[in-house]
Image (cartoon, rainbow, N blue to C red):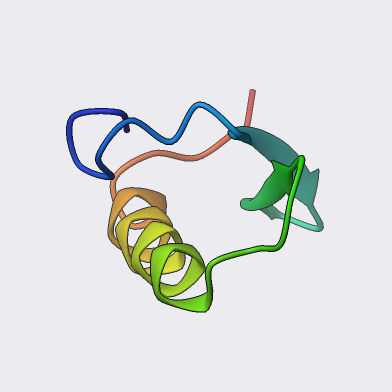
Length: 55
């Protein structure tokens, strides 16, 4: 993510289970950059179609 988002050292992204799939949780020390959050959600949406958490 640091390569994509110009060194976002103030942000953490976690993958968490959500019903039968997963979602991302975005945490930051400061104010969340809406544009950056939308980009992360878009990337997660694409990855969600390729990867799941089912055992």
